[in-house]
Amino acid sequence: MTIAETREKVLSGETKLREIVEHHIQEIEAKDGEINAFVSTHFEEALSRADAIQKKIDEGNAGKLAGVVMGIKDLICERGKKVTCASKMLENFESVYDATVIERLRDEDAIFIGRVNMDEFAMGSSTENSAFGPTKNPRNTDKVPGGSSGGSAAAVAGGMSMVTLGSDTGGSIRQPASYCGVVGLKPTYGRVSRHGLVAFASSFDCIGPLSNTVEDSARILEVIAGFDEMDNTSSHREVDDYVGTVQNPDKKIKIGVPEEFFGEGLDDEIKKGIEELLKELKADGAELVPIHLPHTKYGIAAYYILATAEASSNLARYDGIRYGHRANKEEVLDELKQEEKALKEAFEIAEGEEKIELQQELAKLDSALIRLYKKSRTEGFGSEVKRRIMLGTYVLSAGYYDAYYGKAQKVRRLIQDDYKQAFEKVDVIVSPTAPTTAFDLGAKLDDPIQMYLNDVYTITANLAGVCGISVPAGTHSNGLPYGIQFLGDSFQESKILNAARLVELQTS
Image 1: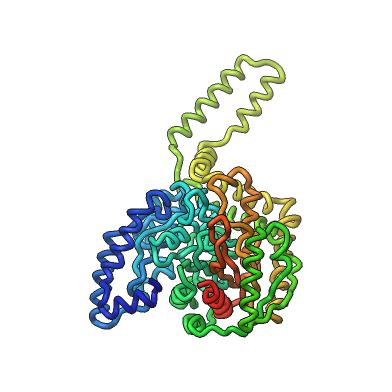
Image 2: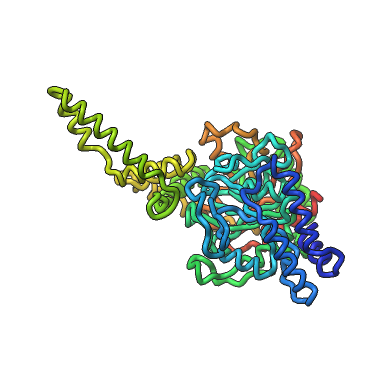
């Protein structure tokens, strides 16, 4: 059921809130052993909260989201809950406060049933880079669900959660939404507070909903959007009537069709399916406008320079001393003593140049503190996070900063200008969400470049800070869903929700 349908049944007394929660608990218990969408569940707390909210319903003062059962991506802080970011580095971290989005959802009587899996620190496109193991796609458990919000998408697609919250740094809401056949909304940067979101890349990260319908995403966005004094990057701009827009969609919209998004690398069947949908929208009154986004081809390169640079800075705090997993100090000291002893013994019997070399090695031995830092981070971080930290540190290092980081920032500005000029002509821009349907588990783990290319259509929206939505567009001949993406200008979420609803009407 949709949020509106659920709310109607709950408010009318036809269904008790506890029954809805129990239904989702049963779904999780039946399915999640195979899918692995949840890293932790809070069944008793959810049932207790359902009883408390039922009293509010009976008294006639229930919130907008009474009856909504949600899963929360495991990098959004909930007071008293473990927030691990699917990493060994934070396996024992328990949040002492609520993220702003959690506070706003709770104030409207949403119920949180558990925390969902993700790529470690949101770094990945398949939800295979998780300390809790990979999540599987409910549509086909041999396939990935996408990432990094793969657990969020799988929980909705598998019927284990009505709605979930995810985060989108380069497509991490929209791409898994496409792979799992659900709706995924990335708001404009600054539309939703990031307070309480564990940072990957601070100038890119956005919190947004994944749901079964466009209207459900609109309802969640209305609650979580708006200025927050705890986040100086959040906007003072008024929150629009997103639900009203979805309920009364305007068919006469201008849709920009960039040739850069429909070229080489796109699956032929997905391309044909989206072109057919656009023809149907045109027949209903939409205008298709050919446009160009000339700097799109530089998007992936610029993103992986800038995002990894920010990641290396944000993750520097997790060193085992201030925050995060700490390696065994005694083991570190023993290793140091043994290495030092071996070098000294070799030095005593060495002669000539060999003696000089051993003396230099002794002088270069790391201190116990440096070794503790190294071992803690080596043990705490997974391979993809290490890869991105190393890349980010490299592009920020002396001698390379201007050549890479500085140049990527200039490209980011050019991409922003491309979008700005395009939105002077059109209401929304259309593209596939991903170049293919979901790929096999393990197929791209050893090829990071191919993995990064899965985000080719989503990354530029984060570089430009504009909003985007993925809505199911059809089913491929391989039996897997694929999505169509609409991008809108800054704070024009109403326009992309409108376009997504028109597609939903065509495909329903």
